[in-house]
Length: 241
Image (tube, one colour):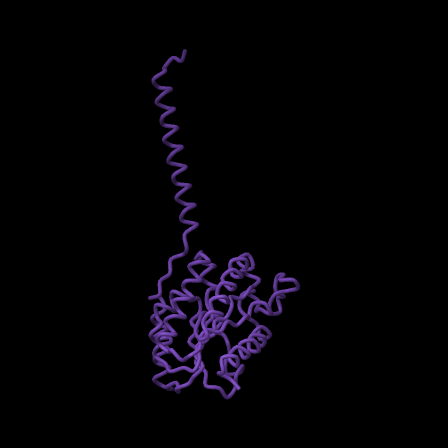
C-alpha cells in the first residue's frame, strides 16, 4: 500500500491535467496550420492607386484588352506578345482572387475593355484556400465582370503547374476542370488551357525551361507558349483577327 495514497492521486490528476493541456495546444496548432493564410485586400491599395495615376497620365482607350491577375500577369510583356494591340496590364504580384474581387471596381469596372483576361488562383491554393473556395471566387469574379460589361467576354486562364508548387497540382487540376466546365455553360466565358502545354509526357512534372530560376514564374519560353494559347482563346472570342 502506498505511503501517501492521497499524494499519488494528486500527482496523477496533475499529470492528467498537463496531458489535456498539451493535447489541446497541439490540436490548436494543427487547426491553425489547416486554416488558410489571412487575405488582406487593403494591402494592395497603393498598387491599385498607382494604376489610377498611370491611367490619368495615359488614359486607356475604349476597346482595350484588359489583363488582370497576379504576378504571372504583372510580369508578362504583353506589348511584345501582341504588338499593335491596345493592351492594359492590371496585374499585381502576389494577389489572390479575393483581392481582385475586392478591387474589382477599379481593376475592371472602371474601363471599357473589349475582353477581360484573368489569371489567378495560384497564390490562393498555396495559402490554403480550398478547391471549392477558389472555384467560387472564380465564379464571383466572372459574374461581376459579366454584370459590369455584359457584352465583353472573359477569358479565364487555367492555373499553371509549376516546379515550386508541383505538390499542389492535383488541387490546381481539380479547379481547372471545374472552371472549364463552368465556362462551357456560358457563352461569355472562354477557358484557356495554358496548363497542359507546360506538363511533361503523360501529365508529368513540367520541364524547368518553362520557368525562371525560381521555378514558379514563367520564362520567356513559357510566355511565348502562353501567347499562342491565349491568342487562340482571344480569336475564339472574336477579339483578335
